Length: 269
Image (cartoon, rainbow, N blue to C red; front, side, top):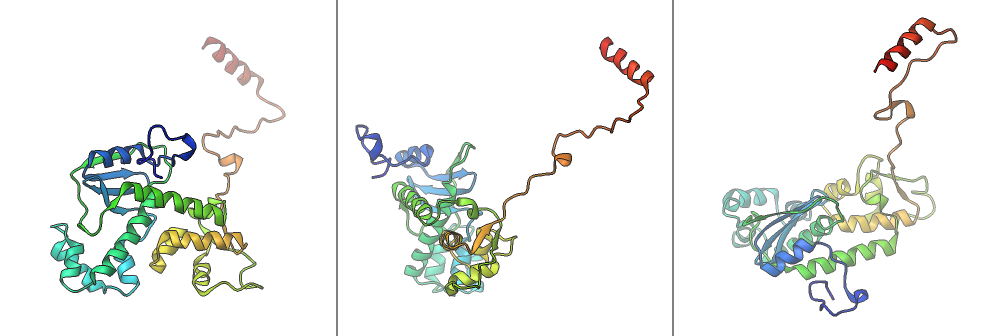
């Protein structure tokens, strides 16, 4: 049961965590606009989620074109013809570029993928811009309760695979165990090939044209198997730490007169 549907008298243990009180309030208001958070944006229409975007995930254009559902020329044609009217999704179907069912499936995948990251915990207040609509236009709205429920399910699923979330955002590097005794499946092998110590999970997802969440699932499994690890940030040397002032070395025979003048100046201050 979601927090929005839970009764006021329900035991605390039976209530789902509240991911975004503002999002639930906007759903109750049947608001239309864009909820902007640190890691992404949720677009609402009449209180339902109609689209989501996050810099951590490939956009719907990448998912459509990478999988061969749509040619790049067809995508840019739709943007040019219908983007200003916020009807890109409808144009893709009406013009025969994409079957309606394929668009809905891809759109829902992109929506849930981006919402997972957009609803990540943050200490920065969210902002809502009333009346803002996304250029993709109406495809299939999703209730806020369903988006929150799926986000929580995905978090729990990742933690069951491997509870260390370090590989979710840090650069990734395959370990020495890769390619030894236990060969990885083809899908995971491609991910391991891209784990070069510089690419993050989001970089790999964009390069493969895959859902960022599904890439995280594979990465958590690879981390649990000891085949990939996060490249953790190295601490700065003490001498170059921010705010640290390096004092000149004191000689064995200091200038006594200079020290006295410094002492007198400090006492005067």
